[in-house]
Amino acid sequence: MIYLWRLEGQELVLNLKEILKYDELAAIYKRDKPADKMIAKRDFKFIDLIADRDSFCVREGLSLTEAITFAAKNSNMPSDFKPDKQIMKAIEKAKELNGGIIEDMLDSTISAFRVDAKLVKHIKVLMEDVGDNLKDLTDVEKVMKLTDIVINVSNTIPDKINKLLVLREEYNKKLNKTLNTQRGGKELTASFDGAGLEEFKDSGKVERVD
Image 1 (cartoon, rainbow, N blue to C red):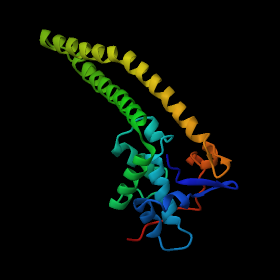
Image 2: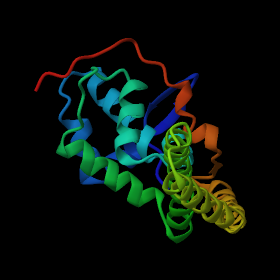
Image 3: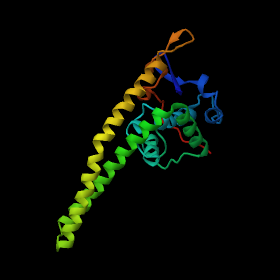
Image 4: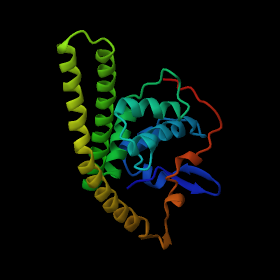
């Protein structure tokens, strides 16, 4: 697992010891020439919101499009912001460094839940539309078929919940083992590493100049 931020006093600063190890991440830092690195900080906040395993995007199984929208809004990006190729490469690298078999399975299970929720939501709209405009038995059959689909989807939920609980337990064991590993003679915790990005303090909005 990689942490893009570290806690220094009461503020989070870029964790250069880790960032500069990987070309994809180092490129984001190095392309921002001013000494204050405000654009790089904003870019890494955006990247972290999508790639950090503790982030809302990962926990809620957002699609990439949904994650980009959420991260852009919460990292003070311009309203028309679209990540460039370097940022996308950095996101993929950060995800790779944060992932593993357990993490991938966990993500897949959560994403499946989200797809199920969207499916049921769309079916509900269709059922209401048909139900409010019943004309004949054909319409009744349509509603019954849609109801069967909802029931079938619902029947898979208990199994997915059990798998999710098992995966979360395994992931928490793995995470705790990682955080309790001694590095440099000092024990690191999630808060020390700066995983809580909600603490990030930015001095203001910055517009990119390409």
